[in-house]
Length: 386
Image (cartoon, rainbow, N blue to C red; front, side):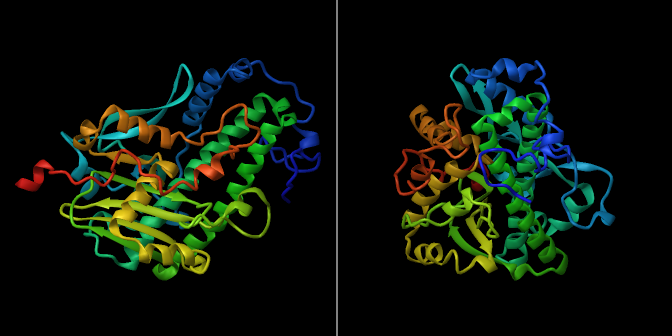
């Protein structure tokens, strides 16, 4: 049973994950004197604690539904193709990635050089399923098939669910250390958001698993944007847009209420190839009517307008972005800062009592602002002259 209030009910399952009722678990427990209790009220320390806790709670498990086929070895699976994508962006086998960090003024974003073999990985699949399931997008050239579109979206779903599991696990660990936090409206609001996310992701898990096992690749709709050159970035992410492209509300109600409806997600892949590039913008076929306004708008937009849209949309919703070093080196500090500002635009701050910051709904509506950077800039990659 799910509870919607800003208080924890005595009889609901304890947010710490013990499986016991709250009144028999964390309600009357004392806080442990830990690094987090020392960090309360200090944004720098709190952000450092959050990031370190997330790292400690990463886990290794195969997310494929057919566990009988799993190999014991869980690998660092790429959320963005290594061969055929990262290799095309890399310089000396290295790419630029985004990595969260902590600075003097709180949460910050670092941009680091990383070997393409280690970039964009997560421990969410065993060796067998990572190799066999994604073979049609890892070893076969992209050819706009339903199967390929489904697999790109399925891998995004797996990554997003993995990240939410890590975050929820980290939160539960925090509650076990400071159960008094559940008397704080911010903590309860955070917990309710995790409950909503878990409910939604379980619904998507059922849909994707059924489609995967039955090979029903038409369970997805995909809008494809094609460029006749190699774009200098790659990304793969899921998002639940709050507004359509004409600024009409979409998912706002589902973000704050427990009901039978799930958030409606889009799955976005930017796929550079040797002499072409693609944006794959996907959603579940059963959500086709819900996204009718998005589809209609995309069909009327020029390439220039689509570039503008995704220049805003990508940093708004994704930190899983890889940049070609050639591109990153040519950006000015002003352009880098503009991208960084957009990326950090609505991260929750300690003074807010909800994980949905007061101005974030308005901010996520600003998808027609012209940024000073261009993620779809055309460059001459050295290998293209060979």
